[in-house]
View 1: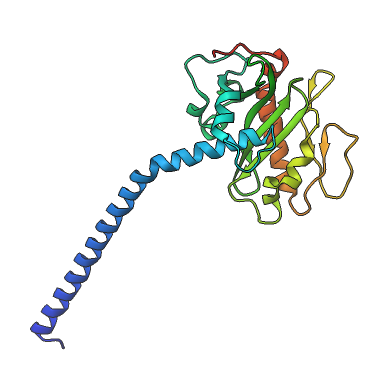
View 2 (view 1 turned 60 degrees about the vertical axis):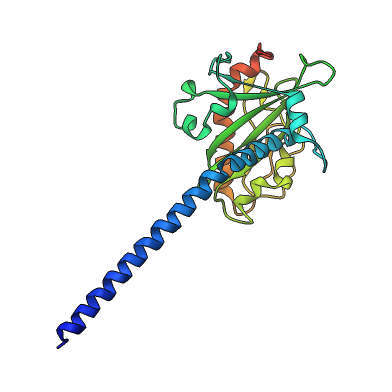
Length: 249
């Protein structure tokens, strides 16, 4: 049976451990909070730069050393639309949270658009880039779909994912998969049909403007991409059919 002295020492030891652990937790938590706040501006800048790069990469081939900010500022005009294809005054694309909008009914969503203008004629739209958002096998998928000046033919896509299976569904972010969408058509005789990734891989769909080859072992991710494109392209349909949208310069 422990003596009073031993019992007291044990209590003192436990108190010390608790106080020490609490102090370490508070100090570490404070340092992490400070780091988060102090680095937020840089993190936000990196996120904005990555977004600009993805938008530009969907329409042009960026070379090493290209000034992304300069190209973006001189040739990209962003604005926000409603479902009817009308510009929402006073809103900027960066104010729109696609994850939140995705939870809304399609007719209620805010729809960012980025028009890539000609260097020689700022009023001439060479490409229109539309953000898209959906759900893959394990988590959210998103990206950008760029169409040419006919507002029907795909110039390029950039897909991203949160947690698709490495080597399988995660391949949607690879150039190999994304290049398959180039020059595909989202309209067929005026009807929106989107572009569908097929089940299985190794087939030639070069003569079908609405189909692309699939990904072996990633059927569910492919379905997620198909649903994402069909869902969001339908939201942009009114804008696309108008061919041109007045934009505040």
